[in-house]
Length: 79
Image (cartoon, rainbow, N blue to C red):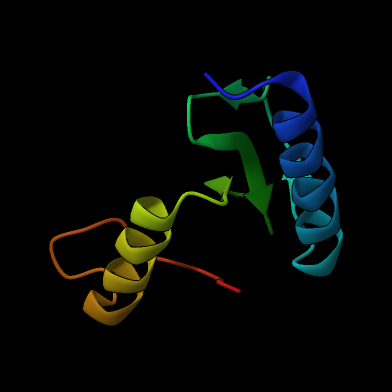
């Protein structure tokens, strides 16, 4: 599992995205080996913010964006 420094950077990025996309934290963050996830709401709707630097996870995000919610979770925003 990546060290604390890695997750600190991901948590900082999550804070930036939450501000940029008007997200409100709605639970405790979850750290995985490759990602930092935060349960959030936007305009009252529940969502999950996922921040990663893992190449495989980034490719998966790209695919989810292309599939536009068809058979996968919808991607509300991406960077």
